[in-house]
Structures are given as C-alpha cells and as structure tokens.
Image (tube, rainbow, N blue to C red):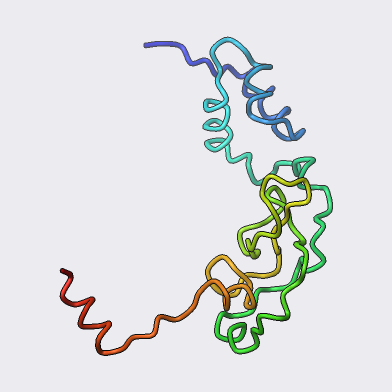
Length: 153
C-alpha cells in the first residue's frame, strides 16, 4: 500500500490557503511535491470547502451593467414588446464581462478596441427581445416549400 500525499499538515495548509481565496494552482505550487491543481480541486471538493470560500478578487469588482439584479423577461413578453428600433446603439458588456443570461449581440468589429456586446437581459436564445426579433425570423411555410422539404432529393 502506498502512502497518501495528503498529510495532516498539507490538509491544514490547503484549508488555510483555500479559505484565504488562493487559486488551486497557487495552492498546488505552495504544497509542492507532486500535488497538482486537479488534486487540490478534488481534495477541496471532498472536504466540502467550496461553500466557505472567500470570494475571488475579480468577482468583488463592480460590473458595468446597470441592469444587474433585474430578471430577464419571458420570451413571449419580450417578443410582444420587441421593436427593432429600441435596441441600444452601443453595448454595455465586453467579451469578458458578459454573463450567461445577457444578450450577445455584437457592436463593431471584433478586432477593434471599442468592440462590445449588448448585455441586456436575454429574451430568446442568446439575444434580448429587439435583437432576437432581428436574429430569429420565422420561416414562411407554404405548401410548396413543405413538399420540397419532404422529398429530400
């Protein structure tokens, strides 16, 4: 049987560093001797330390979006009120600050310094109501188009 790399001293040091807010890579470097980032993350998970962790410094910075805290409209509501002309002219988010439930409609050239994304609450797919109205257009189905589709020639 092989001895575990996780001694009581290392586990105590891991707990201390993790609760200070250090990253798993930093902790692995500090513990040294064959302890990898993945091993640190696995041990943190098994010890149940994730819930008691101090917030990471980057997450403490205020977000630029003034819409934070508002819930996204249901898609049906947003589509009913969506007018293509009511979308903002400039984005509120960047590639690094956009979140999962925020509109990803691009503004400008992705290579340009001032490139941004809409950042408003998502209504349908990846876009807010006005941008979804432009991006997702219904397909007009005529009897002829359905026949063509059914044949699959």
